[in-house]
Image (cartoon, rainbow, N blue to C red; front, side, top):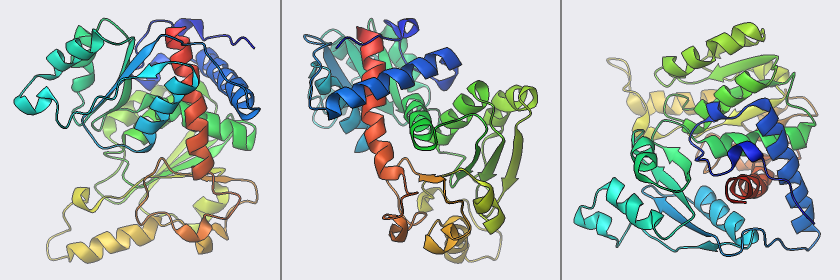
Length: 325
């Protein structure tokens, strides 16, 4: 079976959600679903035979790293087993020199780094495409694409949905990319931004989506707690981690432990909270989860976060194939 790559991605780095238009997204979703059906029927793909991918991860990862590697292997390509630990990075080698080195052995690099500016530094010296697997609190565009595929596959539509983005919206790069991608390319009904005080969506992200919200008449509401009314209104509840080490300092005289505990309770998604939810809706999470998503809903058919991981494999296959084919 032959697959049709998304031509606009050929030879391009994947850096930000803003580089994708609706035509690109629809084509990637169609390609990912075709590859999913092909692989799940027991067939193989050899479209990237002879191509080499190198992951360059300066931060820990389970799903993104494994997903990219599995995607490359599923396409017939090879993966260089590079680890930052034990490399010349520990001898003080600069990011640019490390990128130049690995780029000389590879057809594509996959970069995750704690600093936002690292992506621009890498793409400025790389001769081959770079996939942004997360640059600090900046963006995570391939996560936004796989999230969009998940919504489309699970609900049968993306236009017209109401979605709540919940948790640490300040530092959560996944929700930065997802909000930009969805509001720019789809006619959503409403977006709820649910975050503890001090962890709200950054103003620069809100500014970036303001024109799309106005043009498409998308309602946006910012709150500090997940209420039954919001749960009942949503087609998608998208949770992110609330990290204790990033939790803003409590008000003077307040108990920081108690404040963190209350914030967790205000956004927790559990069986009791889903009693208010629609019969046809989904709960998503980029994972890993900590305390914001209860295990008591894992068996609920509306819990889509484990299926979301599988969709991620096929979306990243579609991206790599389009970039390298």
